[in-house]
Image 1 (cartoon, rainbow, N blue to C red):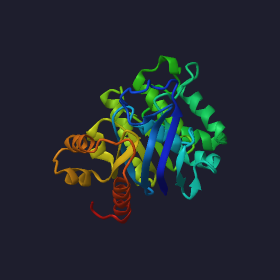
Image 2: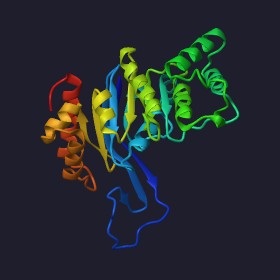
Image 3: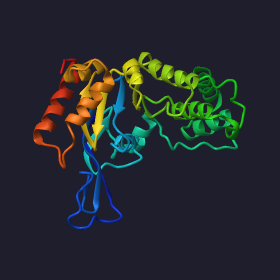
Length: 285
């Protein structure tokens, strides 16, 4: 369904480091910052994939590329055979994207906001009303759907943001740290909805720093370090490959033992691609 092959993304730096200055980050090369250097992902229909990595590893950049908000500098990605660059308009119809910076209009009520975004996707009339009612029920918005956004708590706003990203019934849903800053009830509702996507045949990619969310929900895990995908497999494969019982220990073993070099080696790239092949075929790493 989704195939990402060696995606890279570079940005110009505002200033170049002085000659002889030690490169603190291998992604900085001259006047260029390589936010993503080599990331490959394969995701099947109905699967949930968790993105792990330190702040600044490149997770949000990757998700923005997949959501067609950014164009990659190198590599390619296809969704249902559609190229995310050449067929961006059609890809957007099939993707729902929730980012940390998703804006809401404070003067609208939750229901009015969903009506507005639904109309942008060509929904109207009874079909739009039914879709809004379904999302309000599924995400527990019913108690405040007529209140202005500006009066809602952070958890309430997050639920409305999720509903906004789902209004057009996307086939792939991308969530950037959806539970950050939420209280327990709001986080539970959010995670329960993500879990329900599997049974409805929708695919989900979400980033998080909470290992229990990965263990509870994810069919596959991708770990990104300094712009490079250094692991792709199941939770159990991640643990067994590092001889660790706990996922956080496995995470540390991989990130500390495989510091990304200034450029990924041919062997590293071949290893990751072999891992992707095993994941597709259902094998063990």
